[in-house]
Amino acid sequence: MIKDPDEQAQDTIEMVFNLFKRYGTLNAVLQHFVRNGIQMPNRVRSGPAKGELKWVRPNRPTLSNILHNPIYAGAYVYGRRPTVTKKKKPERPSTGRAVAMFGQWEVLLKDHLPSYITWDQFEKNRCQLESNTIQGTGAPRNGPSLLSGLLICGRCGMRMSTQYSNNGNGLRYNCSRLMVDYGEPLCQSLVGEPLDELTTILVFQSLEPAAWRLVSRLQKILSLNAVK
Image (cartoon, rainbow, N blue to C red):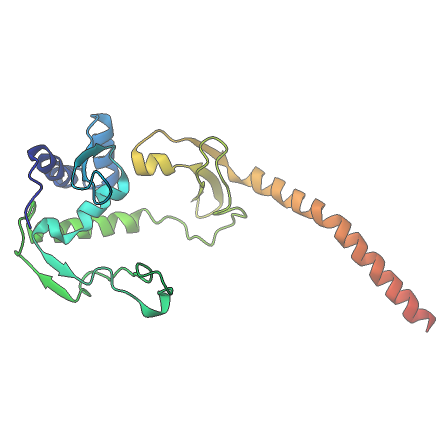
């Protein structure tokens, strides 16, 4: 195994690590790429263009994969995505994959491949990424939102996320997927309480006819029992 033979591709990957070392957050690295119009190298893995180098817009998943993958620190690893038999579906060989935690890989051979960073730097980056995740966790998922995971943005069609503030008392629905993944501006953000209140009213309104029918049936049953 060798580094990508394209020097610009090598320089761009090396830039990812240098920027993360400077800024300390994945979002800051993404913003730097977007702000400066820098694209990411991508080797096509299948199809007629297999093996060709293409340049694509930077995105959060790609940058995260680079920073989390020990191969860039010169390590050969086996068992990062083990197959869980219970999750495997018949006639679908690629299903049932899980993500093994750091230190639970079956094989780890350090200093085995050409590297962009040292193993020590890789571990520092991993700890920094974990720390950033813990700091950004915020309020627990089990908050007051009625529509968490259900709202679809009317502008871009992306699923909106739920954000809490003031220890879970403040609620907003944000369309931030393109901002998080591609460094674009926030699509839109809505105050959550009025939307949840309207949803509650509409739900009860839709249930009213069924409720009245139920009351009517109960009254008939009670009247029949009274006659008996």
